[in-house]
Image (cartoon, one colour):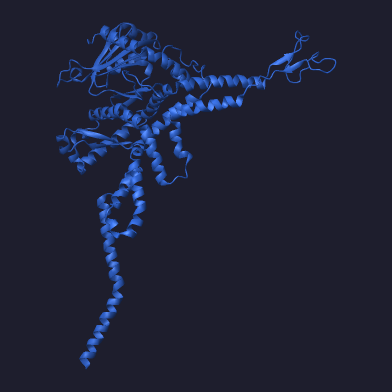
Amino acid sequence: MSDDADSLIKAQATLATKRSNFENWWQQIALRVMPAEAQFTVVTDEGQRRSERVFSGKAVIANERFAAVLDELLTPRSQFWHSLAPEDEDLADSQETKIYLERLNKLLFTTRYRPRANFASQKHQGYMSVGAFGNSAMYIDEKVGEGIRYRNTPLRELFWAENHQGQIDTLYRRFDLQARQAAQRAKEEGWQLPAKIAQAATDKPFDTFEFLHCVHPNAERAYGKAGAKGMPWSSHYIALQDRQIVSVGGYNSWPYAIGRYVIAANETYGRGPAAGCWGAILTLNEEKKTILRAGQKEVDPPLLLGEDGALEPFNTRPGALNHGMMSEDGTRLVEVLHTGANIPLGLELMTLENDEIDDAFLVKIFQILAEHPQMTATQVLEIAQQKATLLAPMMGRQQSEDLGPLIEREIDLLARDSRYPWISQDMPDELREAGGRFKIEYRSPLARAMRAQDGVAIQRTLEVLPEALQVDPNCAFVIDVPGSLRELAEINGVPAKLVRDVKMVAQLSAQKQQADQLAQVAAAAPGMSTAALNAAKAEQLRAGA
C-alpha cells in the first residue's frame, strides 16, 4: 500500500465500510448503556442530552460497576499489579538481575501514576468502553521534558485491521482538532499545516478541522537507519479537507494498547457484555416504560363522566368545586377508571432482566465475597478460584492485547528518555547477553485468584498435618511448611516487604537454635554444680580416710 494521502484516505474508507454494521449496533447500545458516546452514526453538539431512550438506568449502572471492578481486579492503583522477570530461566536466581528489573518495575508505576500522566482516569474510561462496546484503545505517547502521556481514544474515531496472526497492526484514527490545537501541534511537533488552517488559527482559532492519523507496518523500513525510515511502524497525519499530509514519522513500538472483550470468528472488533444481554436491556426498558405508565394511571387514574355533564367544565385541582357532577338521588356522575394493571407482576418480570444484565456485566460474581463475610479462609479461596475460572478468558485477552503491549510501549519510551540513562547503562551483563528479554508476571487480585486452587490445596494439607503427625511423626518431613506458607502468602497477596527472605529466616532460625542451646545449658547448670560439689566432697572424704 502506498503512503500518499489519497491511498491512505481510501484505505480508511474501506475499513469504515467494513465496520458499518458494528457502528449501527454501537449507536443503539450507546443510547441505552453509555449515552455520552452515542455519536457513531449521528454527530451531535457538545453537551446535548442523549439519554432519551433510557427508561431504566440498570445497564448504565451495571457498566459503571463493571469498569470499576475491572479497574480494581486488573490494574489496581493501590498496588503493584505486575512485576518483571528475566525470560531466561537461568537468570531467575540472579540477584543483580532481580534488583535491576525491580527498579525498572518501580519506575513504570511511578511514571504511570504521576498526576500529569492521567493513566488511571483514561484506563477507567477504556474499561467503560469495553463493557459497552467490547473494545477500547489507549494511545501511549510522550512529551519531551514531561514524560509519558496516556489518552483513551473514543471508539467512534478508530478503524483497525489485523495481520495474519490475528494481531492488530494497522490503525486509522479520524478526529477533529480546533485550528489553534493544530497550530500548537505544528509548533511542538513540526506539522506542516495547509494555509487555510494556519490562517484560521489566527482568525478563527476555535473552528474545527478533520484529520486522519495512520499507523501501520513500515513496508520500506531501512534497518539500522536513524529516523522514521528505520522504525518498524510508520505514522502519517493528514488534513482531510485539503488531502494533504502534514506530518510523517514513525514508532519504535506499537503506540496503542487495544482491549477487546470477546471476538467472534472472522470479526476484527470485539463484542462486550452489553451485546451479550442486549435482549434483556431492550426488554427491561420496555417493561420499565410500561410499568411507569401503569403506575401513573393508578396514582392519577382516568375519570368517567356522565353523559349529561360531558360538556360541563371539570376541575381536578385539590379543593375544587364541580357543580352538577352528582344526580338528585345522590349518584355520582364521575367515577375512577381502574385499569387492573398488575404492577407486582411487572416488577417480578423486571427482576428477571435485572439478573440477566448483572450476570452479563459480572456484577454477581463480584458480589459473592461481599455477601458472605462469614466465610472461612478456605471458602474464600474456593470462591476466588471459581470467580477466576469464569473470568480467565477475559483476563487472558486483556493481558495479551492490552496490558502487555502497554508495558512494552512504556519500557521502550523510558529506555529512550535521556532522564533515565541507567536503564541501558546499568543493565546486568548477563541480562544484556540474553538479549535484555523479560517477561511480565501479573500480580493483580484477579491474577492471584487464578492461583487460588493451589492455595486451597496448601491450606487443606496444612489443616490435616497435625492429625497426621499423631499417627506418624515422620509426616513432618513430607511437607515443606515454611515453603508452603511462603507460597500461600504470595497467593493471598501479602505485601512482599512483610515476608522475610530465605536468608533472613535461616539466620533467625540459627539464632533461635543457639538461644535454645544456651537455655538448656543454663537450665542444667544448677544440677551440674551440685554434682560437682558432691564429687569434691567425696574426694575429700577419701583423702581424709
